[in-house]
Image 1 (tube, rainbow, N blue to C red):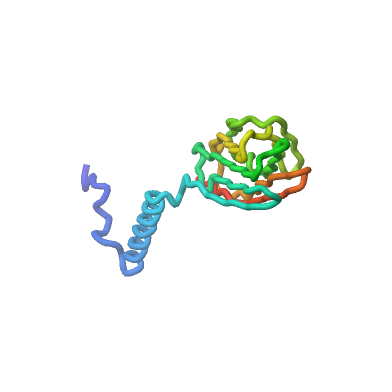
Image 2 (tube, rainbow, N blue to C red):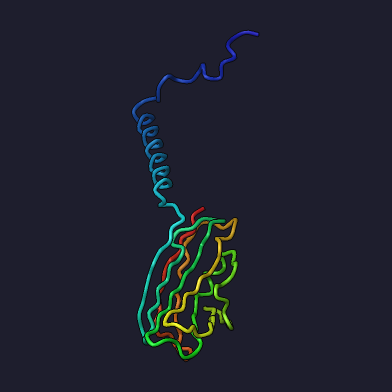
Length: 173
């Protein structure tokens, strides 16, 4: 057997020329940015918050602003009405939001639900206080691709929206 068995004998000691050095530096800089974004939580998971008032109701929503496949993606609604609730509370949510979730359940459980092509309407028994807290226990479904999903949450009175918010939830790969 003649020659060397080295697998790196033909490689240069340094990058070839100015373009090679800049390509190397650019690759290292991109890697540093990705690691810093991940370490700072910019790639998820992260919760977002939004609120609206209307028709005597105040609606606060905490939603999964950035999530990843298999990660928790909870949705938390707080509906307040001065003087309490006299009848069941209707909440409409965009139907598409649930397509990418591994749905666990609502707390409290809705008394009724109905759907149409654009929304799912949940009806909750009226609470004894001025505030109704609703939580969705969910995870981003495994195997989902990256993307953004816009959604709206509306408090309905006599099937008409009185307080509404919208948000965008990002799924990272």
